[in-house]
Length: 200
Image 1: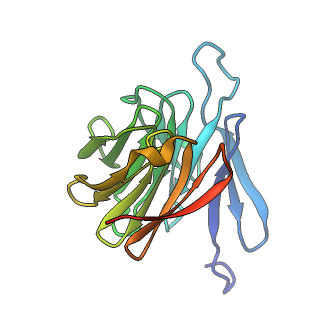
Image 2: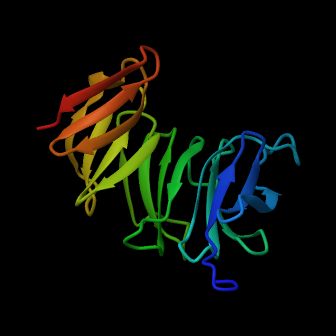
């Protein structure tokens, strides 16, 4: 809180490798830094596919086309940890609201992984799915995962066991899926469709 106003910060990223910290009260970019670059072109940024910031705005996480996830001190833009266990680009990162000491990730390498942010060397849980893990949403005790060409999967949030999946839904590239009661609402890229699918 500054001068009686709650300061809300959000983080955004670009295809040119930069991360931006934005003050939502003023819509002003507070700071920016080069977060990801490809190893064979040092200093030239690559796509930063996803980012998140903790509720206290102290720590940020980014995932990039370079196949790495990076943890940042959001105040100093200093990288504090990095994980390169991914076999492809990291397209989803988030701090779960129920446990901000964890980071959940999705990658083109078809894995969903959960890390303890104090140790990024080994995930505390992981599951290989049927396609690139583009988006992950928590719905009660489950995750609804959009798996691109692999359709969608519903996972138990504790064990990451697959409860239900529809792989054929990915024939036209499924980038977004969300649970609506007992069904799944998803959208596909190639045919411009939004579909309500029975997920029982």
